[in-house]
Each structure stands twice: as C-alpha cells, then as structure tokens.
Image (cartoon, rainbow, N blue to C red; front, side, top):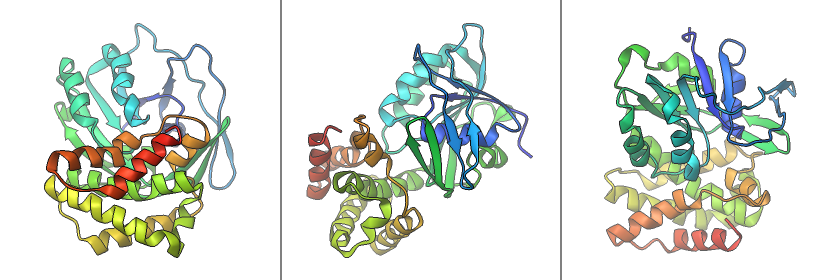
Length: 298
C-alpha cells in the first residue's frame, strides 16, 4: 500500500490534476498557484463521473512541503520550484513530469540549497485534455519513472507511490533511454498534430507516414551521438502504436496553440535541433517543424 503521504501539486494543469484526483481519496492534497484569482475546476473521468478538484491557493509562509509534483510546462519547471524552494522539507521528494528534455541539470543546480531532497522524473502517455474549467481524462496510459537522485532513502518514494499518482506505472532501469524514447514520440506527434489541427489518431493516415519516419530517424541519429542507441524500425512501430492507443487525444501542443499558449517546442524538437547543431548533424525536418510552430505563435 502507498505510504500515508501529503502531496502538493503546482497549478491546475491536466497531468497535475490527473495525479491530484488519483491520490485525493486517501491523501491530503494541496494545489498551489501564484495567481491572485482562481477558478473551480472539475475533473471528468473515463466513466463521465465529475470530481471537483481542490481549489488552488497560495503557499503559506509557515507551510512545509514533503512531496511535490511539478507537472507544468518545461519552460516553467525551474521557476515553479524556485517559488516554493524555501518551503521544501530537508528530505522532500520532488517529482518532475513534463514533455521534452533539458530541464534536469537546471533543477539539480537549483536544488543544491536543499542537498537532502530526492528528485524523480516520470513520463506518462495518459491522455488528459483541458477544456475550459473541465479537465477530461481521455485515456490511461503507461507511466515510467526513475530516481534522478536519492539523498534521503528513508523518505524516498516507491512503486506504490507512483501507482497512486499515475495509476499505471513502472520503474524504468535507464533514465536517459526513457527520456529519449518519450522525446522521439513527442517530436513525431506533437508538432504534426498542432500544425495540421488533427487528433493523434489522424496521423495514422498514409499521408503522414514518410514525415513521421523521417522525424524519428533524425531524432535517433542525435540520440546516438548523445549515447543512447535505438533501432529505427522499433521506434517507428512505437510511435505508430502510441498514435493508435491515443487516437482520440489532442496533443498538448495542439491544445497550447488552440488556446494561444506558449508551446514546449524549444524543449522537444528544438532540443533535438540544439544538440544536432552541437554534434554537426543535419535535422532539416525537425528544424522546419520548429519554424512552423514558432510562426503559428508557439
């Protein structure tokens, strides 16, 4: 059984709300916000059941955070932790969950002032859509987690904690491998759905296959130079499997563009392009996708 933990969540994002609802029946839940005005949101599960989410509030000066889930956009990760770092317990657990790569070194540098914290990363393929004041669960997917640093084993999270948060979760052996694997999926699905205004499932059409294959091939080439090796056909099959299993989902990048929000393109395809430039590798399709998303306002 999961430990009797108290959980703090940053903001009312889709995945943050999904995790908060999952632990709400058995744990104390606090949703934090920096905003002066907040709105009540409703979570709608796969059966259509409506669950009222805790109203977010500002962090109190005398508050202690023992377990923190930071499931915000990649570009907000560091600022979100910086806002609450003074309230983190010495042996706090900090769980990062976002699309893209490139944030972990900055987080670890920031948390040097809290040298006993445990830090984790979790990727999830669960589909959760944010529509107005409703947060709608479209599909429960697999989640993979791994410890980045464990400084306080006595307070560390375990597999039951992650199953409590994400419902379906497994501990991964190699963090770089799961991060690159998720990046490949995001690089292929996110920009194409956003640019073409389609659901994930519509990418299964033959018209997208060559572009998908080329995106995957370019990312794999960069990952290889970064020390992680993938088989091209295996990764293409994985991307197509995710497209099929999340067919009704709207990707986060699609949702961001639709709602005039900043996208995570700099941490997804943009991250690949940044590394490709360092390694002197050509990634023209990924570069073109970055330019297209930026042109659309993302």
